[in-house]
Image 1 (cartoon, one colour):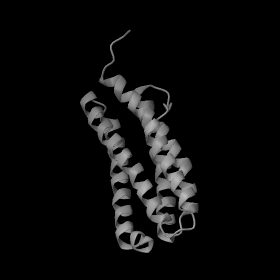
Image 2 (cartoon, helix red, strand yellow; image 1 turned 180 degrees about the vertical axis):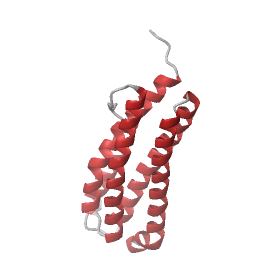
Image 3 (cartoon, rainbow, N blue to C red; image 1 turned 180 degrees about the horizontal axis):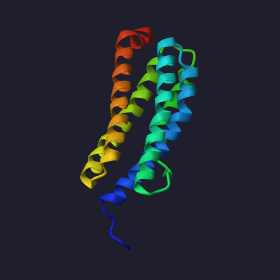
Length: 162
């Protein structure tokens, strides 16, 4: 068996986040529909559009590497998204629903920030300069989304849930 190296780990992690982004893309419209807050719904819809661009950037990175854009099942994102579904089921029609949806969305953002930060570091180490730029663009979007969700939680959603 060939020895695994950082490049293979980089590609495997790209496959992981590619799968995750596609699952997130499918989940965001459901979360938007479930949200009571117009602001939260708008945040989910905005991030849905951003996620489409993030998927396209990942596809460019695969292309730069000469690899097919393929996902690899990501148990972590499956678990986080399942928790979001549970919140939608268990807290439907309650004042706490939006707070729960927002918390689930931030769990997704934190996972993505962790992955994109790691991938950017590895891409830099491996000399994939074009990939670094694409990953940095997505990382900045994920951080901005997380910040916007935090502000929304503090300014409105958590108070309404209480």
